Image (cartoon, rainbow over all chains, first blue to last red; front, side, top):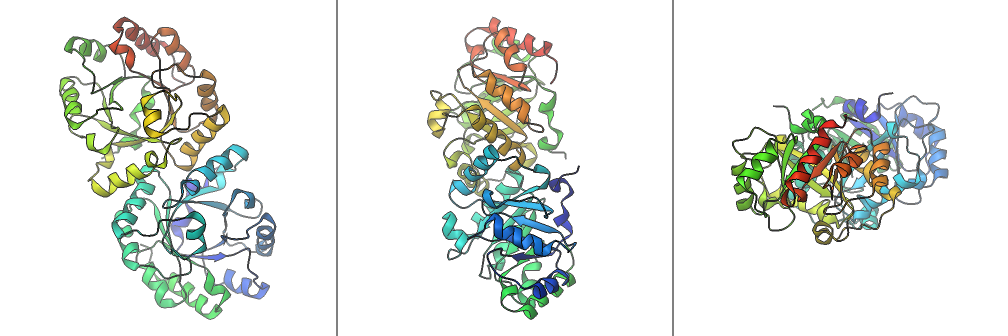
Amino acid sequence: MQSACESKPWKHWRHITKLDPDREISEEDLKIIVESGTDAIMISGTQNVTAENVNHLVSMLSSYDIPKILEPSNPESIIYEGVDYVFVPSVLNADVKWLRDIHVKWIKSDDIRWDMIVPEAYIVLNPSSAVAVLTNANTALGVEDVVAYGIFAERFLRFPIVYIEYSGKFGDVSIVRALREALSGASLFYGGGINSAERAAEMLKYADVIVVGNVVYEDMQKFMETVVTGQQQPEL
Amino acid sequence: MQSACESKPWKHWRHITKLDPDREISEEDLKIIVESGTDAIMISGTQNVTAENVNHLVSMLSSYDIPKILEPSNPESIIYEGVDYVFVPSVLNADVKWLRDIHVKWIKSDDIRWDMIVPEAYIVLNPSSAVAVLTNANTALGVEDVVAYGIFAERFLRFPIVYIEYSGKFGDVSIVRALREALSGASLFYGGGINSAERAAEMLKYADVIVVGNVVYEDMQKFMETVVTGQQQPEL
């Protein structure tokens, strides 16, 4: 069987919708999201993510064919049934626990389905976000620092995905643009604050994939605009 | 141009001779080493390695066709002229400086010849060695811990080489055997205390490549025995 890392399905995606297992979503909204044209659903949260609430969201999605990605925040919430891929984040600019230790411990304790695993190199840049606080991320980075982390992730550690995470805040476009110029093999994901057609278009100039999350819980109309923009933007 | 990481020349090697730029070697001994049948020369040391003594050793090797690998212990001693590959070690079980920070700093400050760079995932296991002391390595690891580090290096971080380093001491064969069983893609390098035909044969049962160093400065006859053994052992 060809592994997810070899087939790289995300190379054809531009728009991912991130749903938080810790937040309620109605059957109606879920149907609209899945049928919106978004390329994949990512099941992901930082706080209070458990096997139970992950399973609940996965079961709500079970009748839909759309690609389903689990992005666990801890090894305890990993499930393989009902999802197509498990994207495992590793935070580059944080305590080494989130780059190395949590993964080594997981490998030691678990029987891992490596064919479904896709490692992601996160660079966390919003100091107020839950993920930055949790991981003790060093967010005081200049463009050159972020680019160095990105090249380290792509060429030295061979991550297939470099993920710029502003989580809840719209980020610095110049950073995403500089990474676009520096990276050649890894796919560039951007997440944070995309809640309009304009912001989606702005980041899609440079990112391969935008990840849209919070707006689905706030304004479905605005969410739909981000999807339409994702479909209109040509692949990089 | 195909990069070193794509062509993977070390896949055909079984025996590497490691020479320390900080130690004297005669022209005569160098000729014997290069013509011994060893597959490659690695220029590598932990202490007092400078661009000057690296250049001196490289120039002594310049008339020989054998593959030449520079394995720098710090970014300041990297040269590209006169060598074929630059193997850059990253120590997995040590302070994060040696896994991440030194490399990010290097990427930020240098114009790197990526086509020559081959990242190595070191697991340092002799607590008395200079490299363990320098990097503050956690050497108190059981077989399962070392295997978890190895899988992390191979499958999560995609290092092409996992290097078990006992530096100056003959290591635990059961650890190398367990890694042999766990790894599927990365090449398994072993270094430390190989100073006889028997020890070479013992580690070559499980390692793809043995790295032989100190014995060339102590007993050239014993060194030659390790090479002959390397040539007799079938590829794994």
